[in-house]
Each structure stands twice: as C-alpha cells, then as structure tokens.
Amino acid sequence: MLAYVSSLDPAALVRALPGNVAQGIIWGIMALGVYITFRLLDFADLTVDGSLATGGAVAVMLIRGGMHPAAALFFAFLAGMAAGFVTGILHTALGIPGILASILTQISLYSINLGIMGKANQAINVDQYELVASLRYVTAEMDVRIGFFLRMILGGILLIALLYWFFGTELGASIRATGCNLQMASAQGINTNFSKVLALMLSNGLVGLCGGVYAQYQGSADVNMGRGAIVIGLAAVIISEVLFEKLCAGRKMAFAFTLFAVFIGAILYYVVIAFVLWLKMPSDYMKLFSAVVVACFLSVPYLKQKYSKKKKGVVKA
Amino acid sequence: MRTMLEIHDVHKTFNPGTINEKVALDGVNLTLEEGDFVTIIGGNGAGKSTTLNAVAGVFGIDSGKIIVDGDDITRLPEYKRAAFLGRVFQDPMTGTAATMSIEDNMAIAARRGMRRGLLWGITKKERESFREQLRMLNLGLEDRLTSKVGLLSGGQRQAITLLMASLKKPKLLLLDEHTAALDPKTAARVLEISDRIIEEHHLTAMMVTHNMKDAITHGNRLIMMHNGRVIYDVSGEEKKNLKVSQLLEKFEQASGEEFANDRMMLA
Image 1: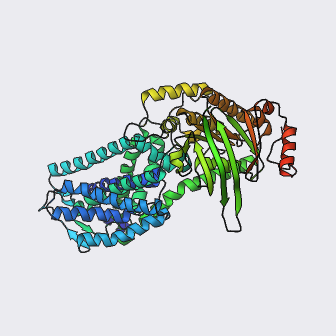
Image 2: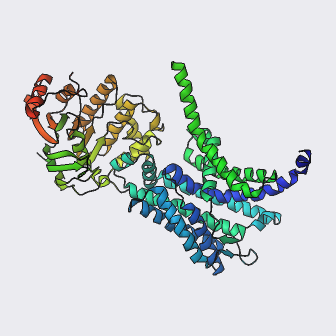
C-alpha cells in the first residue's frame, strides 16, 4: 500500500491535466449536442457514436485533400447534420422508435465512415497541416499553447452564444416545446416531426464538429473513435446537472449558464479520468468506469425521489 | 350569420376488426354559428371528447366532413388545424409546457398558426401585454412571467391555457372537460374565466362537461350525445329554462336506458 502511494507522482498529474482539459473542451462540443437531444428533445440519440466518427473522417479526408483545417470543420458539421437527418426521417416519417432509429443510423455510419476513409484509420500530421487543434500544441511553447487554449475556449463560448440565440428564437422555442409536451406543441400549431428532425440535425451537427476537432487533436480519424461517445456526452450533461443545476436555475439567461455548465461537465469528466488513470487504474477499465459513473448519476434523481416519497409516507402514517 | 363549424355525418371506429372494436362516432352532425357556445353532455363513451378530438385532428375520421369557417379541414394534420382552434384539455398538464416559463408558453401560443422563424421568440411589447392579461386573471401570475409553468397549480395552468387559446383569436374554442380535474372552487373559477374570455373575444366554443348544471347555466346551446350520435339539441329560451330532471328524462327517453352513471354529476 505504502509502496503504491509513494509511487504516485503529483507532478505527473499536473502534467497530464492540460491535455485532459483540452479533451474536455473538445468533447464539450459533443456534450452540447447530447444535451439538445437528451434534455431538450427528450430523445436518447445513439446516432452520435457514428456521427462523431463521420465528422472526424470527413474533416481528415478533406484536410488531406488540401482543404484548410478550419473550413473542413464546417463540412464535418454538415456531415453530422446529414446523419441526424437520417435518424430523424427514420423516426418521424417511417415511425421507427427513436432509440432503434438512431442505432440503425449508427450501424450504417460504420460502413459509410469506412467508405469515406477507404480504410479504418487515416492520419494527418500536424507538421504538414495547420491544424485547429493538436495534442502537440498542449506541450508546445507557451504562445502556441495559449493560442490553442484561447481558440478552444473562444470557440466554445461562440457555440454557447449561438445555441442560446437559436433556442431563444421562435423556431428554437418550438423545439423546446416539442421536447417538453408533444400534445401542447401540436395544439399550438407546431409541426413536431419537423422540430424533431431539426433538433436531431443540429445535435449531430455539433457531434460531427466535435469529431472533426477531435480527429485533428489526436492526429487521425478512426472508424472506432465514436464508440461509447454517447456515454461521455451523457456523463458531461449529468455531471453538469448534478453540480450546477441549482446554480443555473432562476438566473437571467439560465439557459446560457446551463450550456456553459455542460462544457464544465465535460472538462470535469476528463479531469476525473486523468485522476483515475493517475491512480494507476488499468486503462482497459475506462469504459466500464465511465458507464458506472453515468449509471450512478442517472439514478440519483430517481432514488432521491423514491427516498423522499418514503419519508413523506412515514410522516403521514 | 357566419357558420363557424359544420360536422357532416362523421364516423369513427377505433380498432376496427379486432375484439376491442368500438364505434366512437356513428354519424355525428352538428352546425355551429358564429358566437355559439355549446355545452356537450352524455354518458361515458358517448363520443363527446371524441367529437372534439375529431375536429382537432388528433386522429383521422373514417368518413364524413369537417368544415371550419368554410374551409374543409378533414384532411389537415393536427398542427395545421391548430391555426383555427384553441384547445383546453381535461388534464391541466396537457395544455402547457411544464419546463418552460409562463411567458415562453404564451409567446408560443401567440404564434399559433404562424410561421416560426429566427426572430426572437418573445418581444418586449408582448411581455407587457401578457402581464396585463395575466393580471386580469386575478391569480397573482402577472409577477411570475419567468416562472416555470410546472410550478403552478392545476387551476392556474388551466387559466393560462385558456388565455393561450385566446391570444390568437381562434375560430373555434374546444374545451374538453377542462374543469373535471379541479376542485369545485377552482373549477368554478376557471369556468368563470372561460365565460369571460368567450364573451370578450366573441368566440365560438364547444365545452364538454360531466356537470349537468354547468351545461345548463353556461353557453347558449346544449347537446346531448349517446352512442356516438347527437340525441338532443336545445338552445335559446328553452335551454335557459332546462332543469336537470328534464335532462335526465330526455336521456332516458332518447336512449331507452336508465341514467345510471356515477360520473355524471346531477347537481
């Protein structure tokens, strides 16, 4: 035990943190997408596991073809939107239950992603291209490092501002109403099928964008890069709710704070991962660990409610 | 006089060809003139709510025609018919979006039947007018514009749903037992608000109720349904002078059955 504790090097943890924060910010983009479907639309969308890799594949192939890495991100966003559109049509026009529709899209995206890349993995070298994000920037000289983090943070804030604006518009409000109460939305003349498709497109667009940034960050797109992505997205959303929900509620611009909290949730998730790895937990168990964390946090509201109900019953008796 | 609603020989059978087959509407005919306020009574399964839902487009009908203010809406999907209709439901949870604020709910209702674009979802002017209209409800909601609707009581939610139904003047207001889930005092209050809104905006309305007395005291016309048909239709002076006992008699006469329905309130 003592040998184990003394083998832990605090400096190693500090060294690992910037990289994990960077990953957290990047996955925060994806978490925003998951927030839109999971919370605003009340739709468990598993498309994301596929559309993340699609975004990565499209970005990498375009960059390799000579496109500017920043411009490639726009197409990664569009590719994600297309994936969301397919899930939306499967669900609304063809009546396939939401989760199943998204799984069908996810599975077919695996083939499509292989088709886009021509093989399972395509690399891009940071020395060859002016990448928006890269692992190397994290350990590079100070000005590159600061520039990178500034870019990520400003990008995140820009996305939050755009989403805050969009969901405040008439169209955005109709999506929120659709997710909250289908009957009410229909009775108020909202085409709920259109709302659902639009929300799925926006959500997967963000996931595709995240895939594009993440592929640049790790220097390659991989057909498996999205496996379990939904769990990471959910973890970020749920961590943010457990920690910040009370803080955000009732504020002016509460929604902007909530979106910001989702980003923080994603960063915290990666910090926790860094900590667990630092404790020398075998990295093979990371996915199991993530799933357990999400399961715990998801069950908290349910158990809380159940427990408080029981207490009430005792008081009554 | 403008004819606001024509229901022509509407038939609807649920689960046809199965053991659960149920003829819900069996040739319903009904015409409402502008400003008519019709109360609808009848036993369970008589087709009252089904008639309202058929008009609202919750499901397609098997045969017949539904015309609102001259437009045949029989084939329109629910969300498109919403342009013509204001609706309040039995369950107070149904008419509003619980996780959204009062003003957000109202702003959505104010755009019923309009194209929703990328303009900001609520304007300053609207906010002021919402505040004024909430003040008239006398429920203390005028200072709670940004409160989530989910935090409000059932009566408050029904009152807001009523207001929402009238923000954009509907050609037809459909009230589907909208006081049934409320306690008597709140129910009376919500009925009072309904009357006021209908009068103020000169709305054409249909109200399903289980309370015979309410059915007699509200509106200018009363219809009774049984087995998916309209079996009694009365208006004007004759309706005003109706007694609950007469209604019961009518029911027994028309249906040939004893009126033994515990959901039907006699008083």
